Length: 421
Image (tube, rainbow, N blue to C red; front, side, top):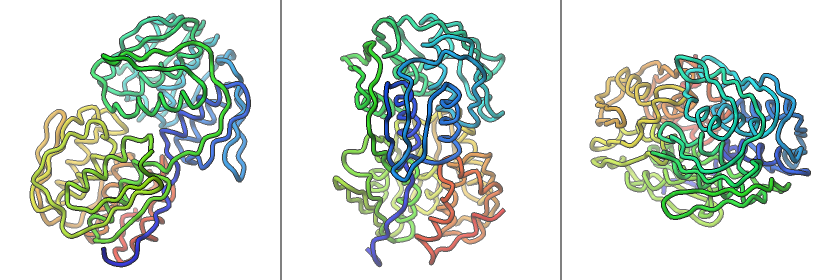
């Protein structure tokens, strides 16, 4: 290790914050979410719940959520902004209630698929209609309660369809038994189940992948929201490529977030990793080691972090199992490849894979495609490569509004210009 251990200030997990908001909204009573993420996505999710009659109060100790103890009954239009979690989690919640709900969002969100979710809601008793030809927003749900029963869901495009249905399960009339066919991002389903149990639901998984949820609703609870492991990937990678040591407190061995597994990828690339009960620390030990292929399907939100710094390794790195990342805020495989090539680097790709070869990146302007993860990943490379700029630095506000300031605070000796237009 060179120099002192730097302590990163990573905001709360988006995945935990938005799941907990919905579970608290459905609970009877007042829940307290400590250290929630405050960003564009979570504010959009919170405001959508407010439209359902849920009260959310901000205080020094976190967000107090006064749940209704029931499903929504008012109907109306729900604006999801750019938040995929809102578009996938809120329709099943609304469908357990009564009334007609129309979900809509930005053009970027409209391009993301929703048909598997709409089909599943139809099989459970709702009238759910997506917009052709994309199969996404606007999505209209004519709600009259959901029956429950047995269901298989196409989860090959996103695990969020399955998560949305599971969280609605305790509000259904009968037990729900659901299987995710072709399930991607499996750790998020484990996270969902743990949070549901925290708010008093009965959910169990059986051999073969069937998950059963019993009716009975939720009870109010207090929850400490962990720092976001996906966001932490950027400071961990920055430590690895700058030869420094960075720790993230609150993100330790007991984390419910699968994306903490990214540090094991960095370990494979030569970084030193220490995980304790209360924190995770990554230390750069020299040039990155390449020459390996790795399946990042379970932690696909972090594959861009690896790909952006892979040119600094001593041999090619191949990431595979990430085909579903083409259907996120952008086609993330294509976006990463386009920008690496703009930097003068050699890449190869397929439907679900990307290979990055070592090279000497040149200065270039990064096309962020309004995707926060593209902007943050290439900002890490910018710590080592002068002249990298972003065409849309503010898009990081989706999950980490203070990202650029925090990167500069942690790595002033590697000051980057990537936060400039």
